[in-house]
Structures are given as structure tokens and as C-alpha cells.
Image (cartoon, rainbow, N blue to C red; front, side, top):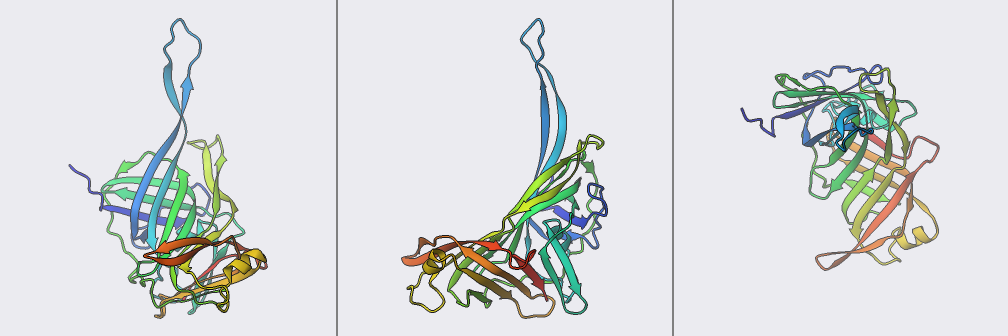
Length: 309
């Protein structure tokens, strides 16, 4: 029987104990995932001791992990202060959630270790990947669906033949990237795209008491960066002298608000953006700037904040 690519469902939930499968549910933890890619990586140990011939012995499987990536729409749950189904995955990318009752969900850089159990059902073959930690980037392109691009590492377990339970997704529809209120240093540029990377370094926690020799993965360090592509303007344009900001090592604040319906408003802020040198580009004969920048701390654990209202 053929297995269908589109019949792939991803579920994710935070773990109570890092590396211990938490068992997400189809009713509460299913995410609308695009472009799901799962790769089992086995550390095969070669055995080439001396013998009477030059043939090698069979390899032995060592530690085994899973690389897992997929994209998720950046949108709210539909209810203010209710975390969307993808929220735990963001927390496993080194974010802390603060919920203000009846108002909003706020994700800030974390000070604690968080891991997720992610189950992937590929048309009846189910992978249970525990101890996951990940990197995320936010991809915003004018006229397109805003996306969260996740890349996780987790601990391998032999998959099973398991029928896929009917998932319950968030009921909201993503807001197309248009009609936003976006400023960079008080300048409302003509923006083509904005890409924001968490810059997480994912590290392994080896433990030979564990079945696969790995307890879990965690975020060891983070170096968040961004890139904005906008139409180029003269240096004299008010609040838009990106060359001077780079030259003078001047920081600027980024703010973006997408959506206007309660329960589906996304706000992203980065208070300290340090520019690298703007790069020239071309779009259909129009000059553009590609502006790379670092997102740095202001008071600490605040380099980029995502708020769902």
C-alpha cells in the first residue's frame, strides 16, 4: 500500500522531564506543518581490528538522533491569552511564555532549559522524538503567509505502525503579510521581506544511562540576527540613513504589528538592532538595500519579543 506525502501530521508538547516522552495529543497539540523533513542519523561505529584478511567486521550502531524540520504558520490561537498549538514548539526554541489573562501571550528569550516531545505520523508510521530542542526563524515576505521555520534535534526511538488520530488544529487563518505597521528606527520603509533568526546553538547531552546514549538536546547559546530587504533611499531621508547607523555603530529598534483581529494579532519587537553594512540589491530595475543586523540585549533576555494579542 502506498503512503501519501500529504498525510503527515506533527504534534508537539513540552516535556515535564527533559528527554522523557510527554505524549502529545491530537486534540490539543497538532500543528499545521508544511515541508516536514525527518532524518534519522545513526553514528555507525566501524570495527577494523587486525585479522588474517583485510575485510572489516560489521559496523555497530552507536548514538542515534533525529533531525526534524518543518514550517508552521505564524498566527494566534483565535483567543487572546490562549497559547496556539505551536506555542510549546517555540518554547523549546529557548523561549519563555508569560500569559496575561484575557490579554496576550508573550514569548521572550528563556533562562531555563525546555525540551519538547514531537510526534510525527507519516501516513501510519509514527515517530516519537523526545528531548527536542530547536532553532527557529521567522520569515515575512510581502503578500505571503508569515511562517515559523523550525529545525529540531531529538532522541531517536524505533517508529511504529500507528494509525493517525484525527488532529484538531487552531481554528484561525493566518494573516497575509500586508497592511502591517512596521518601523525600523522610526522609519517605515518600503519592505519586501524581513527574516529573523533566533540563532540557537543546539547541543547534545550525552548520558550512557539512556537507551540511545543521549538524555536530550538543549539550546547552549543564542546569537539572534535579522535581515531586512527594502527599497533604497537617499541618506538624507528622515530616519533612514542606514549607512550612518552602521558607520556610527548606532542601534535602532524594530517593531512590527501584523493583524487587527483579537486573538490573531502578532507583534514582534527588538529594542537593540546593530546594523552591519547595507548591501546593494536590484529588483526589476529598482535599487534595494539588504540590511543585516544583530538583535542584542537591552536589559537582558529581551533581544526579541513575540506577543500574541
